Length: 208
Image 1 (cartoon, rainbow, N blue to C red):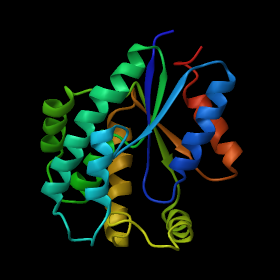
Image 2 (image 1 turned 60 degrees about the horizontal axis):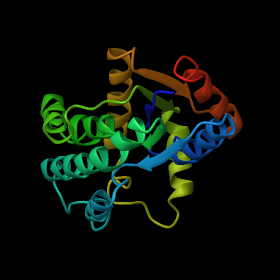
Image 3 (image 1 turned 45 degrees about the vertical axis):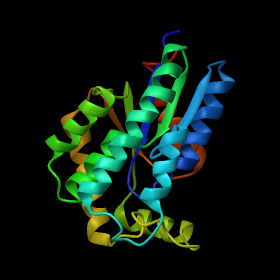
Image 4 (image 1 turned 135 degrees about the horizontal axis):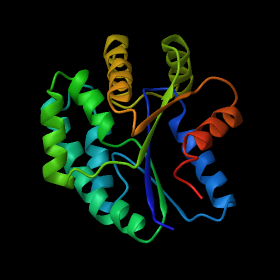
């Protein structure tokens, strides 16, 4: 079959990593070949940049520097991992992609959305997922889950204040409303199994 590129998006604490693993398990059980990857990261060069982005104090980079680093990591990731896997017929499941840069460095970081998109056009030839699954939780529940997850300390982006993360969540909602052909918003409340079922349902038109 033709390969597919699917991204999972959402703010902190919505369960992307858990659901990425569960979704991959379900699709593999159907006999599909699945490549699981993440951003920043997913290739050797991009993983090196990941460490620069997520380690250190909150002010290590400003929004412009972050946007450039994310775009560089994404360019390597797309060229070396995502496009080859899709060409081979894989289902590529990616934990975050361009829309996270648009939300975090763009809307919450104060950069213009057009500038983030232009960096992506230059670095990654404008590649977009076939489907973006946006996991959504009420802000209070997402914050509680994030706090429980980060008992050992959040990374430098995840540890930013509530106003920053509220701007991120609002941006994601706006993207989904503006691009209904690509996005599906999925309720992340309930058990992990229930959420996985919703994600599979949101992919029904793309999968055999």
